[in-house]
Structure formats: C-alpha cells, structure tokens
Length: 233
Image 1 (cartoon, rainbow, N blue to C red):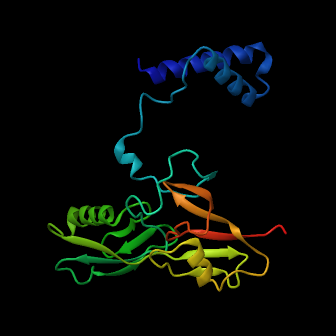
Image 2: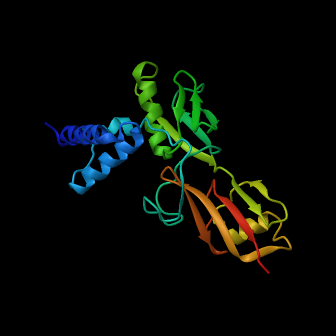
Image 3: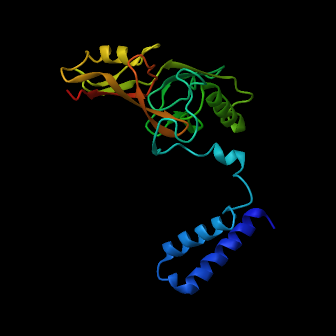
C-alpha cells in the first residue's frame, strides 16, 4: 500500500473519531482537527501516491494567480535572467517551411493562446518561443504536415503599463533596457505629488504575481505594471 493511501486512511480514521466525539455538526471543524491531530503524530497528508505525471503539468494554464510579496514561494529570478516566457500581447511570427498559409504573424490573445490554421488554438502563455515551436510541430505532424519545420520569432514584446503619480499613465510599447526611471519618462514624467523614491512593480513570475518594491533604476520587463507612489510630505 502506497504512503499516500496509508496517510489518507489515517486521515479518515481521525476525522471519524473526532466526529463521534461530538464535532460532526461542523465538517470544517472535523477536517481541521483531523489534520492537526495527524500533524502531531508526524503524518503527512498525501492525496495519491506521488506527483502528477509530467504530461499533466503541460496542460495546466496559469489562470488568475495569487498575489504574493516579492520573494514568497518560488525564488524570483533576477531581472533579465532566464528564458523569456510568452504571454498576452506578445506578437509572434510563425514560419512553417513550405506552408505559406500557416506562416504569418500572430498575437497572443487574452487566454494566452494563438489560433493556427488546421490545428486551432495552441497555448503560448508560459512557454518559450522554442517550446511553442515544438508544440506546433507536434500538432501539425499528427495528420497535416509531414516532418514540419517550424520557427517562432518574437516580432514585438507585450506592452508595459504605468500608473499612479505620472502625467500620462497607461499602456506603452516596451523598449529594451527600460528601467523604472525611463518608464516614467515615457509616461510624461512625474506628477506634482509623486514620490521620486517609492515605486512598485507588479510582475507575473512562474504563474504567481509578485509585487516588488523597486528603486528607480530597477529593470522593467514586458508585461510589468509600474506604479509611482504619492509622496507623504
């Protein structure tokens, strides 16, 4: 019997015992108390006998992520490090050798997908350009194109957003090498009430939304939301 099944049986046993003791009128109390009791006994509650299969992870979309302070959960990669992950607003060029009807520009939609003739919707969100190439190649090879040769290039990064104490907040095209200070310049500069030292960046990282308290030379990435705070005096 797997460790997960054993832990689940122990959990049910604890819950049943507590219910008989008089807590059955409140299911949440029973479950909470059972979990606490198992923790005291050193047991871990595991649903199933192991992690989900690798292929299942590829089917999970980001969805509306929780908001955490910077550094919570998965370590936050340094700005500019690691592969660029596609998301809504990125403009892509997909080239399929010998297939002019499939070779065109696509914009990643609000659902994080692009729609390719013959194969329909393909998830781009959370993938690199190379990962997306592989996904399109595999889908085309199933029954449409023999040994397809696919290339995906980024024509234009998704925009960034800036709000708060700037003269003209809103959405702007991303410029390579941008910092908080240059983003403020793009938005027309500081308002009269702006703090010149207090800024916040909201950034999606590995499926989470991180809120970063940033200095004015902090790098801005595509899709970032920059907020310029109001000064207190």
